[in-house]
Length: 107
Image (cartoon, rainbow, N blue to C red; front, side):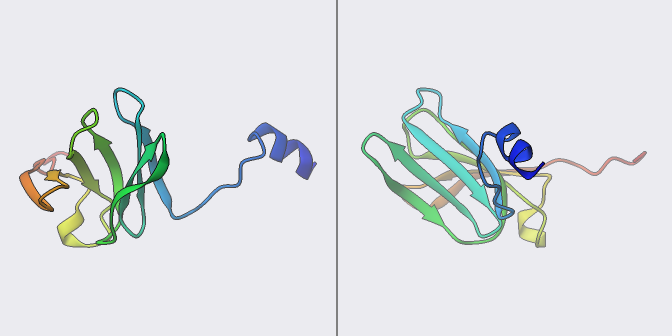
């Protein structure tokens, strides 16, 4: 029974620290979000381009092959709310913009 479960998942082991994985629009980089932070990895040649370990990041999206990255926290601390979108320039290591979604009054 265990082998059929592994085969159904493609034999890939799960990682509970990994929260998101996405390619940029031209599939040249992979952006990963984890409970520790996020990384940008180049596909060819394969290697880490950028990474930060500043708290859980649930969504990481990279704009084509630029230094602009959109981040959404995982809610593990107030500064990384799941309702807060942050646009970061990884070359200068600073946020360009940040906005938060208002709380739903009927929820």
